[in-house]
Image 1: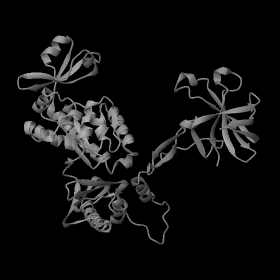
Image 2: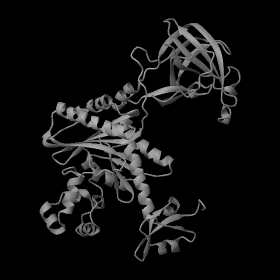
Image 3: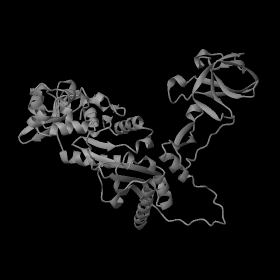
Image 4: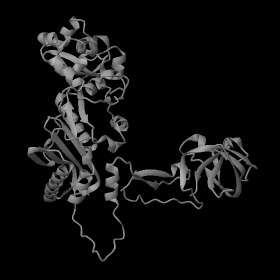
Length: 480
């Protein structure tokens, strides 16, 4: 299919055919969603038209929802034919906060050929409206700022029936702010309770529960309470019991949990949730209980909790292994329990692994904290600093070209006299990456000042030929 020709997706409603989706080329030519297919074909002669496949689209959206459920949040639901609702409360800290979560999600989807607009707000209604009506890829509304964010949006953002929207526009009401300023009684008398209900949901005055998507293979256990509970120690007691039941169910299926979600149902018909992620499959009740109970203080029981539900959202096969004797010290200590504890507190953990590159900033990469060794090692003969700067910092230097180390250098406003030095170590550019590195050279020196502090500095260039570098000096790391 030619990439330069406009493409539209055509849907059917009875005998009518209309455009349900269009690529950027078609949109630039004036075609719009909802336009009759015959009119679009008359406007653009070489238009490519593809029949819509609603059933396949719905199946793909459900698969995306299940992937999101395992990766981002325990509460995910399909929203219409083109959207997802994700309740990130209690799980956003695992991704570094709301801003990093949504930007990471958009980038992952873009890498798979999908475009998305994501909005985070206090209420489902506000997030739904902002994601669909704003052009920005990501929008994060600060807490308690929903009113300011949505007050100027058109009333179509309230998810009202088309006839109600049309009736409100006849009265001159075009924005949410104008509608919210109207008296409730005449509004309800003329249009029924739906506009007031949608406004209350938008501003968070009434709850709008999300019914999360679930699959038959998910293992869950439930505890209902005849009398609501609320004390932290009581919640912890029943969480431990649920963990024991879940562990038994996992053992029956030969599985271990990688992600567990605890749903807290309150008597006021609101719900909270906690997510515990694990570095590898686990079904040890003590370990799972600790991860969940450590965050019980974040639960607000309100007027009481009437039900607890614990779900193993992501489980993997777990093989039994023999436990080492207490008389024999294990050669390798298992650090995954510590990684799980720190990771569930919001810390982003990683290890530094070597990469086969002579250029220092390219010689390392981050891998998961519990990832296996990659089998590579640094092939260097010269010492490397304990702390390597991500970006080398410019320094002012007095040195004799071309091969002498600095005699004095100024870094971060402080002048330092060099008393010992070693070098140079010459590192060449990687010409196969980009042409401008074909002649690039760096000369590195290990220098020590009068206070005994040691630095890793380099000169860009060989000190003679300007083509090899700017001959400016930089500090690239410090030795411990």
